Amino acid sequence: YWRIVFRKDGEIVNIEWLQTFVETVRTSSITKAATNLHLTQPAVSMQLQNLERALDSELLIRSNKGVQMTDAGRVLFSYAQSFITLADNLRQDLDNLKNDTREVLSIGTCSPIGQYALPCALYMFKQKYPQVGVRVQNMTTAEVVERLRDHSIDLGFIEGGIDKPGLHEKVILQSDLVAIVPPDDGDGVQSAGAKDLAATPLILATDHCALGSLADLSMTMQPAIEMDGLEAVKSAVASGHGFSVVPYFTVKKELYSGMLKKADVAGLDQQCTYSAVWRQAETSSPALDYFIHFLQENGHEVFC
Image 1 (tube, rainbow, N blue to C red):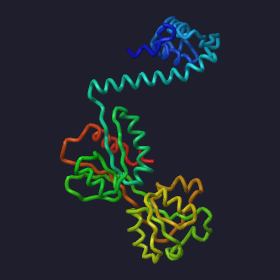
Image 2 (image 1 turned 180 degrees about the vertical axis):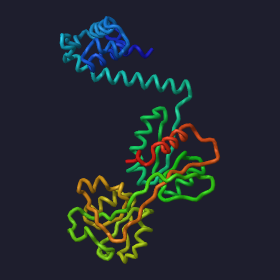
Image 3 (image 1 turned 60 degrees about the vertical axis):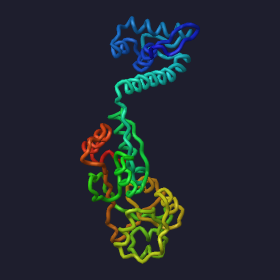
Image 4 (image 1 turned 90 degrees about the vertical axis):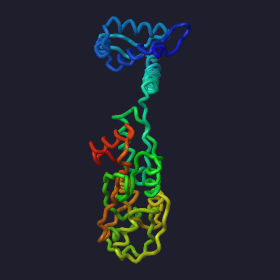
């Protein structure tokens, strides 16, 4: 039933004709299109003629050099691709309902992973497992543990590690901490000891791993300004309101573009560790099994 796209003046436009049209345009050849579609050349020519008749428009100009689109053909080409995609999605969704194969993976994650590392991994995961839906929520580490225990989420990403009965963890990322300063800061701060930044306001994200690392430096600093989220921290630093210490992977784009500048602080050689966490000793969903296998197979390289 999805072969019929629409009717025009009583004429039926078949989705297969659109697929043949798109493939002919893509290859610039009726012969190549026929080969790729496993059709005979006369069958391809007939489908193209049927399409032109149904739309009452010349769509292709045929010559010894191949085929070229007319103005009407160019208009149809973009619509045809959309129709084909919609038909494929419809078929997939109906098949999922029939076979009960659709899965949804619910993820709770700390903000740095959710904002800066996870998007690339999810894109690659969806390429491999298109039938799995993914729902992501940002939350604190304590909330991740709570949501895992009450089965509100399937998988969590947290800062640091965790030693809780019934939960399994896997380190997925380790990132160096870097001190960031405004782009117009003087060159002198590029190589600085802890004391050089003591008079500069410190801006940190709430509940961030950098808090403990800074304590290890024995820095005497002004009371920190704590903000909700790294984007707010980066904006404040870029505007000249202070400095911050953040995981490198969260600011590599800004450092590359020059929006922020790195200050080499003596003694700041710590890392932030991030882990995936999920319930163990129970039957897990296929979606969770797929994702865990995906992580084990690809490691940290899938993260942005």
